[in-house]
Length: 330
Ligand code: UDP
Ligand code: MG
Image (tube, rainbow, N blue to C red):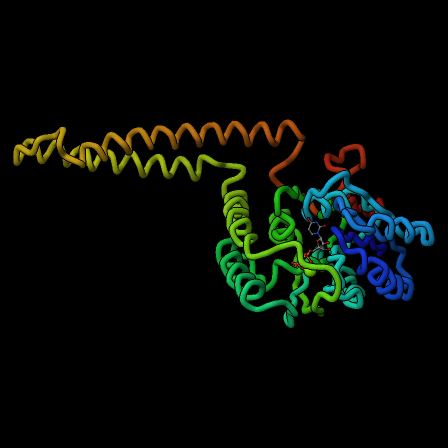
């Protein structure tokens, strides 16, 4: 199987030539066909010039240059969409990931997995503002999404191209790639990978990313559970509100009749009115969501399911070009 290596790069001028040497060494030794796609995410140092130099001397190197800095997720998305070989390997451009892990990960793909994600078991970063928040985040994400994972932040991954290219990566979603792929039916496996301390340049993230990750987690878990049927969430909330409104309203009436408690001064009456309104809002949100889901799927000819393989179908009947067709002899 051939390999496209995708590397998002933002201001890593010292790292680029070294990274290329490491990748070249590993990949030229294996007999797999390969390409190296470097995405220059609007670097302001000499990263762009370094990448051009590499592309001139080695035709395996391909460079995508962004007009400005769009962020790591956008850079990975661009690299993935432009990749043309069987398996996509993503990694950081700062020498923290080790290309010597790549052959082992590709072997896993050969075994039949669709996605192999790394676990930086021996992570070489600061403890308090990097490793600790990351540990907590991984634990929380794993609990919420029910996806067993130790290290979502590890960019070193190998993914079959057809699956990588159908992932919708927006915002900071690249951290959730294994979970998104798993939702698309990918067979995932985790392997322990090496990790080195940063030698050149500096990290592009601080503690501030924790809130972004938490917000993305909300989005991901909503998409996991309710994306194609939002009424299941909002309808339930609506029903809850209606029930609460009935209980509160009846109690207010009961208190008026039984004990002469003034209805307008009774907070239960207010609660009943409030939850009637809220219930109506939730039902409306659910309906809008349902309509949106239908527009989403019909507009883009998307299906809420993924087919792994078709057996004995003609290519002409095929509804999704990424699906493999297997034909038995007549
Ligand atoms: N990166 C990028 N665009 C950005 C920020 C980062 O392409 O806006 C790249 C960066 O050059 C590196 C990778 O994404 O190759 C990971 O970034 P970094 O090493 O700063 O993250 P950390 O390892 O500290 O989590
Ligand atoms: Mg790094």
